Length: 450
Image (cartoon, rainbow, N blue to C red):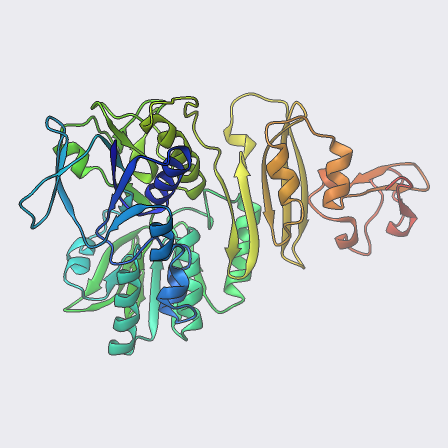
C-alpha cells in the first residue's frame, strides 16, 4: 500500500511517523512546498533576531526520514487532486502521482483582518508581513536591515505576536503591539492575568494598545504606520500581522471535498471522499477548528490508525492547552479559564495572584473535578494539572501545591483564606483590619496544619 501525505508540518510529519510505527511495510511519501525538512514554527521570531539559525529550527534532519523509510519530497507544490483515479498532480510536472491512501496535512495560513490596504501592501512587499515560515522570517530580517527600520508595529497580541514583539524589541526596534481584544492572549488568559502580562511587557519598553481596531495601513510605496478606528495614527517602518490563522482548504475544495472553514472530517478524520483523510490545522470537525500543536499531535495518531484501516480510536476534540515561554516567563494554560462564560453553576476557583513577583496561578474546579488552569510565572503545578484534568482532586492538596494558606485572627477566629481572596495575606496593607473584630493584621496567624 502507498500512502501519500501532502504537508510536512507537525500534523503531516507525525502522521507519517505514527503510520510507520504501526506498519513496517507501507510505502510513505511526503510532499511539501517547503525547502526544509520539518521545523518548529514556535521559534521563528528568534530567527529574525539571529538568536537561532535555520539548522537550530529543523527538528528532523534528512537521516531521520531515511532511517524511518519516509520519502520526503521538498519544493513540490501539489496543484490538483483527482479522487476518481486516485492521483495528485505536482506543479510543473506532467506525470501524476498515484496513491492508495491520501492524507491532507495542508496546515493554515495567517489570517489578515479586513484592514484597508493590508492585502495590497503585503503582496507588494512594501513592509507589511506575516510570519509563518522560515522564508518569511528571512524576508523580515532582510527588510529590517535593508531599510534600517527603527519602529515596528505588531497587529495581534497572541502567542506569536508577543514573541515577535519581544524579538523586535531585542533588535532595538521601538515596538508597539496592537490588540483587538481588551487583553493580551485572549484565548489563554483571563483579564487579571492579562493585565499582569501587559505590565511585564511594557516594563521591557514595548508599548501595548488594547481594545483597538486597525482600520488602515498607511504608506506610499512603503509602509509608514497604521490608523486605528477613531483616527489615531501609530507610525512604523515595518508592520507584522499575527491575527490568528485560516485553514488551508483550497486544494480540497477544488477536488470537490466537503469544506466550510476547513476540510470537513468525521470522527476517524476521513473526508467526504473515500481513501482521503485530513489532519491538523486544515480540518473542521463538529463546526470547530483548532490550530494548536496538541490537536495536531492527537489527530496524527488517530489518522494513522484510520489510514491503515484499524479505526481503534475516534476523535473527540482536543482540550486547548499550551505550555511555553512568553517574553521569558513560563505560561501554562489549559481547559476552561473563565467559568463566567460557561453554562451552569457549581464552579470553584482557587487563585494565587502575586503581582510583585509577576506570578499568577488559577485553578478551575467544578464539582471537585479539575476543569482548567492558568499558571503564569510559576509552573511547578503543571505536571499535576496535566495529569489530573477532568478528574476529582483534593482541594487541600491543591492549596498546598500552590502554597495558598489560611490565616486566623487570634481575637475572634475570623479566617482569611488566600485561595478565595484576590490578595495574598503578605501583600495586605500594614493597616489592614480584621473584618470581624477590627483587630490589627499582626493578630492573624497561619493555620497550624498549613
